[in-house]
Amino acid sequence: MAQNNGKRLDTDFQDAMLRGRKLLRRTLVLGTAAGAAWFALESAKALSIF
Image (cartoon, rainbow, N blue to C red; front, top):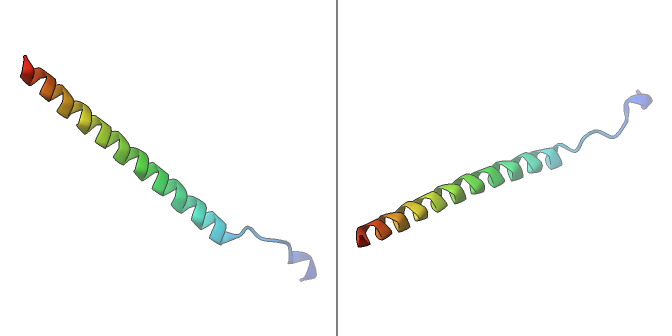
């Protein structure tokens, strides 16, 4: 039993890392969608001038 008391992986840190990656992924997707919408809107404005 004494030999099995090694340090284990901190599961709280692992969960925090997974949540951080999920948040980063969602932020990138939302940022890309917002950029695409802005690009489409500006293109529509430019085309409406001509």
